[in-house]
Length: 143
Image (cartoon, rainbow, N blue to C red; front, side, top):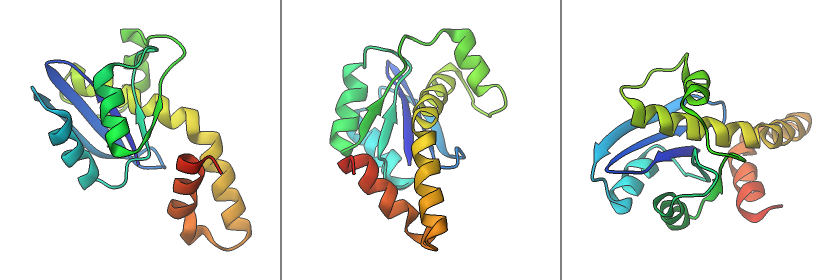
């Protein structure tokens, strides 16, 4: 799974699967890293955490480290219009959730070619049922 986090006084968070489908979305004032991790792992094993800033905020880095996940971020900070463009056909309640969703989509887009390659190899060998296990190895271990 891929998580997007928008840190701040109100923390926005989202979890999407490897098909880009939203599994969890929400926001909460003064949400600690521990409580956020508890919410995120209910949706599944988080392998990548996305942010919308080039310089990764410490809260995002801390949560990713504690999850044992890699961090994905854009080459430069996303502008509001870019976030709106990425999330325009998706549902969210506020700007915190929009920012978290944009962060997750950025991370998803970065690993999409890798996901496609793994899926293709497993389909050819008739072992698509191993997708989650293999993608976890590929992402976490760099295999």
